[in-house]
Image 1: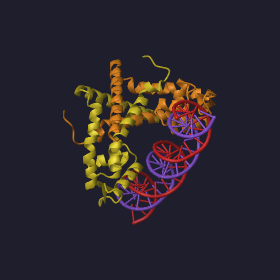
Image 2: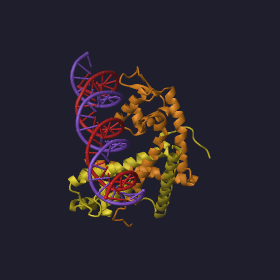
Image 3: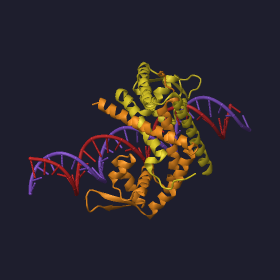
Image 4: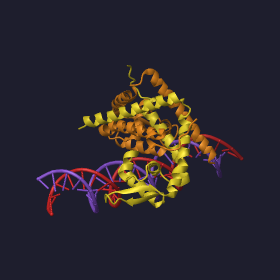
Length: 157
Length: 157
DNA sequence: ATTATATAGTTTCAAATGGAACAAAAATCA
DNA sequence: TGATTTTTGTTCCATTTGAAACTATATAAT
């Protein structure tokens, strides 16, 4: 099991991943920032609410890997832009449920196909079997990374 | 060629990529921020200078996918921390060449093996053939994304 | 019931980031 | 040579981000 001892950033997987991911993200972002003037966290919020209407801020945060401050801000801004509506829960006074407005729904309906089209252009070249394979590898890595994070946390206390 | 019409963020490749990449990056960052108090752009600068001493700011920027402002700031801060030394070029008065100091070199020498170890723990699970496959896909995607960006730029002017 | 603890969400302040304008030196060109 | 344009790198300003403190409500414990 040979281990390299120098680090060519261009070949270093975390670095390549980061560059690729940033490029993909900014490509996607250009779709919705230009047309609807929303940011990445705002788009993510719209995307989750499009799938699961009525979520609370905390639920959004957990589904979307954003912290609660980011969600607060995204939601506030989406409400100002009239893409999201909030209705306070009568069951729990701390909480409010969030929903897309008509125009918010329109954002969702227009952006989703474009986003999927980009996904398709980037990954669609893969044959279905390859695609499954890729998915599996990605999952593997996700879980390894989260294991590593836990180990490191454990180690540092 | 079926096309989905809804968007489960959790299955959406750009999103998964972004989460994975952020997790990997923050895992790596925890290595060097704690020990040496440097940021991600600072680490990247150290990494490139470790491989190619004497680069100028612009050269660093081009190798590392950072803009020149980010490089300026990273370099300034690294100089304050005595990890980098600048020597102005006598050939070109605008330019200065950057090098790691002794302690900068120490940062490099200590972080590289840890970074490679993490890379290895995350990707090392893949059999060599899988690894090659992954590399190839990654390259494919990189080039697809950059093609798409160009198209979009072209289209928008 | 009263106190303590936990959870949801917001605000505040400091640091990081991005873009435009800028100064200085170099290269181009008339 | 002198004028114009490019290139390099920095500074300035506005926006974004992150962490911690804080408010309000709910839950648990005694």
